[in-house]
Amino acid sequence: MTDLSTNALRTVVVERYVTPLREGGSMPAIVEADDWGMYVLKFRGAGQGVRALMAELISGGIARALELPVPELVLASLSARLAQTEPDPEIQDLIRASEGVNVGLDYLPGSVNFDPAVDSVSEEFASRTVWFDTLVSNVDRTARNTNMLMWMRAPWLIDHGATLTFHHAWDGHVADPGKPFAPSLEHVLLHRATQLARVDAGMASRLTLPVLTAILQTVPDCFLQQAAQDLQSAALADPEAHRAAYVNYFLARLNDRSRWLQGVINGRV
Ligand SMILES: Nc1ncnc2c1ncn2[C@@H]1O[C@H](COP(=O)(O)OP(=O)(O)O)[C@@H](O)[C@H]1O
Ligand SMILES: [Mg+2]
Image 1 (cartoon, rainbow, N blue to C red):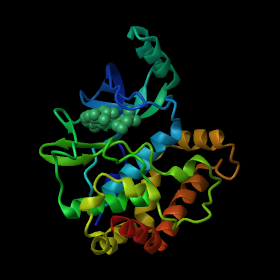
Image 2: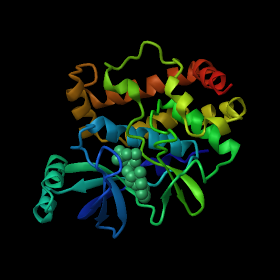
Image 3: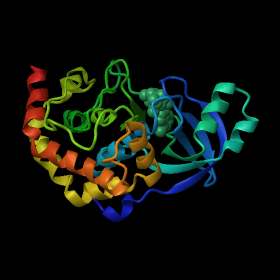
């Protein structure tokens, strides 16, 4: 069983901007923090907005509850002072726009991007990953952009910023939460996901109301308030109501999961 008490996230203070990671669109960076740890920082002020950071926390938390490998997530406090020593004006702007709380992922040193032509995973791992990505509507696990790293000879899941597609236009309710998710048919591991029906019950049974509630508690109020403002949603203005809306969405999607699961199983043939 997932230990709920370990769900609280640590907070670190960013002390040094080390280097940008220019591969993806959101310009994350490697930073060093006050615990001497290195993290990949996801900036609140990046173009994707605060909901991308919320998606990292929520989907990352769900992955963790499902015992899928994700780097440790932390809240990372950033001071605009760090912009002063940064020569690149684009990075200066990003730091200034992200003053305050951001999200960090433990940096996996020496990891390499998962290459589907070379790297392989078990059919069980593929099935559990496709199940998870379909639950959280992840558009970003394709052969072109796997968002998986190989580290210590094992696959790790990263970059959940583009999950939760529903939360870019909602007011706390989703009309059809059990809807099949067509982008899963482009999933890099779909051909290996032979055990979707077999893993289904075990996966769903981990995502109970207390587990989902605890995951949503890791999302800071200031993120929820910013997202409600960006969406101009009065219904989501209260952070607790906002958290409950996500929990209710996942419970409804899980309850109706035979539909989205069948959609992806049918897509394999
Ligand atoms: N925790 C990590 N450890 C090591 N490298 C990482 C980590 N997270 C991301 N990276 C590297 O940085 C790149 C960009 O990060 P990602 O989270 O995919 O952001 P985005 O695609 O939005 O720019 C990844 O493709 C990967 O090469
Ligand atoms: Mg990426």
